[in-house]
Amino acid sequence: MSPFAATLWGDHRPSLTCDSPNLGLVSLVVPIPRNEREGFKAGGLSVGIETQHEEKVSPIVSAVLNLGGAGLMIAGKRSR
Image 1: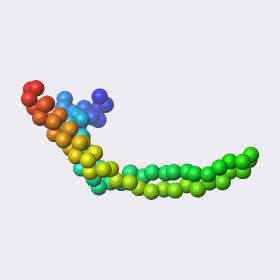
Image 2: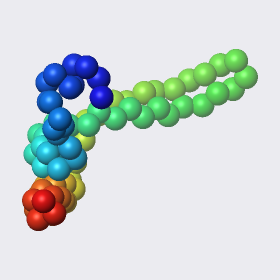
Image 3: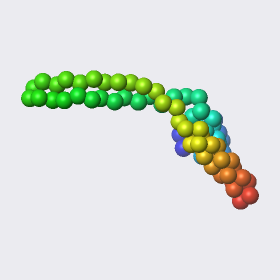
Image 4: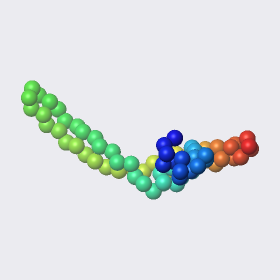
């Protein structure tokens, strides 16, 4: 563990159980950028078009992240 993280968190660090529900909520709002390139090459000549668009994650994927994180948090509390 880095000295900065040790002073910030002490002996306890946030784990995947904290991150998974946060990722589920963020994935509903933040789009994922995507680049696609189409074209052809003929000898030294290259012709192509690059398109960029942003896609949001399916709400089902977000729900799975949220439920998985909640399940991990419940399992973590039961094991203590």
